[in-house]
Length: 237
Ligand SMILES: O=C(O)CCC(=O)C(=O)O
Image (cartoon, rainbow, N blue to C red; front, top):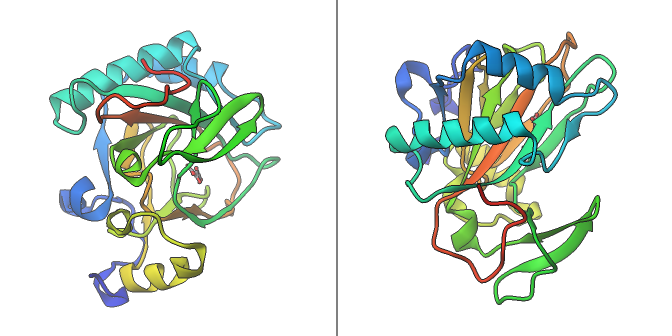
């Protein structure tokens, strides 16, 4: 287990020397082949200045096209299994008017077509008319978040922070989160436009307020690589 002294101070590149791995750290940064034209269309069509994010975007044609292109790319690099499906797409932004921060957490709630009843699926709730629930840990471990950066993200515009290796601890009780971060340390994830931060949703993560608010637009996709489930994802492409 890493100690604070093993963790470098926040740095420009979240993947120094390519040393971060999904397996060991729960995240890594990779370049993508998503074209400048697609990045520009995503920037122009997904965001409204007054909101921090838009959810359930897989029906948007350019999001769908991007999700399929990234699936293809990540399958060829071995980050995703060929049978993976994109199950969620969220557009996050930080601007001067929607500057926000998020406390340390794991991503545990995902969208389904109806209220879940199968064993191991719990905490059913409805957000903006869509059913959400917490799938079993085995399913959570088979998810991969792919955060496509549509703008450069540096120390000033509220970058994501992750606590490396925490994805291997399963679902962490709220009362244990600060202890896990003390044990594992944290890394601040900077990225250039067109790069993607890959992250296991069970990795503890947070983000700070931007200190010099400017756009920090991200398309956050989640893929499932596991076996068919007894419950149906809200979308699966
Ligand atoms: O984009 C961010 O700054 C935070 C996103 C987040 O908390 C999440 O994906 O759960």
